[in-house]
Image 1 (cartoon, one colour):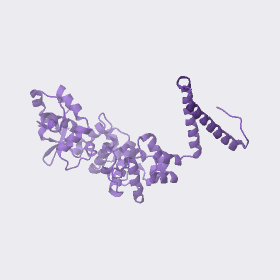
Image 2 (image 1 turned 135 degrees about the vertical axis):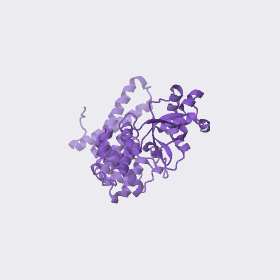
Image 3 (image 1 turned 120 degrees about the horizontal axis):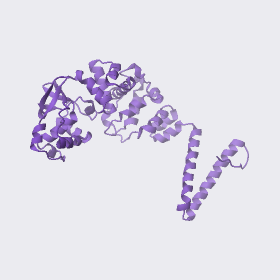
Image 4 (image 1 turned 120 degrees about the vertical axis):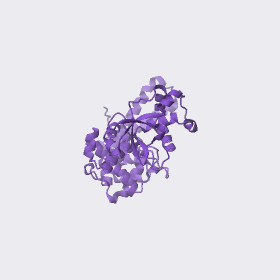
Length: 364
């Protein structure tokens, strides 16, 4: 790292190429005030404002800065820079209706200028990668993938070298890279608009985790992650790629939420649907993922699960009878209907099994 120096907060600017900021839609022409608002809302800048206002700025943690186009751009420490600007720029907090603590004139004067280390982007990637990809201040999976791809493409660093430098398994780096290449391919070739996703956050882990599963791989005719292909999805599967992205991220314009609510079990269920023609047709027709998944399962497994679920619920109902049942006739009739239905199910199953008449009941 280069020599330590100091710069006024007023001369420091946010990094529009920071992978974590890019995740929130920040672009090269995004205004500083808009970046600050996004940082405040999405990255808990208030936590740092409270820390600095009570304990001062920890000067042993300098910001890492590079000079680009005559501007001092903060490569590492954008959240801290946001907190410093909120505390030192008169009227900024009030203009945005942010409630911040008052600080003494002495503290304000002290934090108007902060320690920085000048370093170029290419020279700083190892430190930033270790800290945010596999270190104590982890980025989201999307930000990690953006950073890995940036280092790989702009500086020509092989993925294996990136993995070694940041102390992470090569497979993880490859998985994140392939996931981002698929995401970019969906945007550039398949007509998927990321800004039209249903939720503000990109649930990127759904994508790169799903790509490891056989159903996703077959459906998209996906190249192996070891190939490190910048266009992993077969050119003939762009329609399918857009479908996958809509199922994962939703479609705001069509008011279609993603079918993946939680990664487990929804991602596993979607993978099964992608391997079954009937289930896939149902999902494409707008059927609920759980119902489409039922169509993908062996009918014997569906029957067994239904019977076991019914047994569990009946055992639960029985446990309530001594303390809850109020001798209601309607509840008794409901229990009678259940008994008749259970008897009918048992009789039909046993007749199919033995070919005989009314059976002697088996029990476990």
